[in-house]
Length: 426
Image (cartoon, rainbow, N blue to C red; front, top):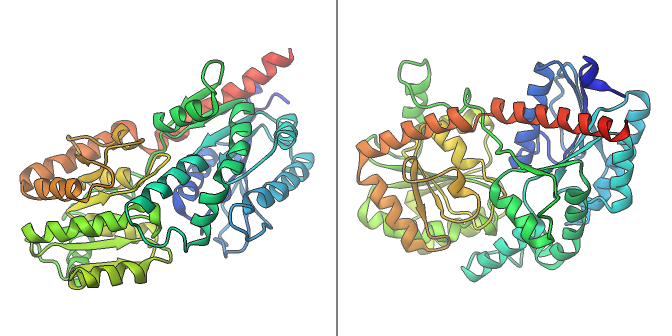
């Protein structure tokens, strides 16, 4: 079928293991990309995992199909792949697709299954990161003394089986009509691990953020001042004291032990500083116990994962965001902070330097708590400069990292995939 090239709108199959209420980075990007596509006149069918209560509000031209999956760490990617492909073929017979968008690595399709996808429509494969990269991040976390690396079933499964499941992401990335990495670091990771350089058709498109939701504090906007005052009061922070924010899943590879060690040093200089961690996961009690042993209980608060609206208010109430993760495919937290006008201190490896530099915050040596503490203390000691960096971060997001920009890139990629398929067949 000619689809978008003869004036018709595209029907896009979005195959993602995460979709609201499973937020995460993947769920967030699929959520925003799908809405942008329908606003541009396209239709989207999202095939995701079942088992959580979704948003019952129907969005015109977005159909959400939730399929079964085996609740077994790592193997769920194969189980989900089986059911998602079965549903994909079923829907295609009744309402043909123009493009299939696979979101790796949380779906593991073998060579034959990718061929079945390609027989339906051109395949675009988003590379959100790699299992081998996740494994390496966990190895670093273990070396840095992060808790629960061997106790968390999902992390343990990644450590033990990443090499096996990596072959599926290699197959999908190499067989897709177009692969799209979410950072140059991720693209290079795939090229080096799997020998995909050369004729491999891969582009880099950084995922963006919602700059309308994540916006800087502005006392002229109704609710901003009241929300900031309320949140800072809740966490016992005066306007003259710093509130340091960290956002991300409570998992070993996110680097929270490094953060707590650094925070102990930060408190020696900034005695009234408070640390707020926002994230879901099973490490809360361990982190609180660790903070208690370090004498930081009164200075630390941990919130479960918050809805985006509340999270945006937390950013606006904060003075500085810290991102100590050992591995990311891209990492959206730095962009959310920058979009909110809040400077960011983040690791100096992987994709982070593609977004963060000394103009919008600072970089520190990954896993080095002394380096992290030094960077945070330096930033907090220059409040006027901190405000300027917040302004620079917001400007950078608007110039390079909005959802609208990334979604427009994907529309162009979809059309290129369709056009190339038609050219090949003519």
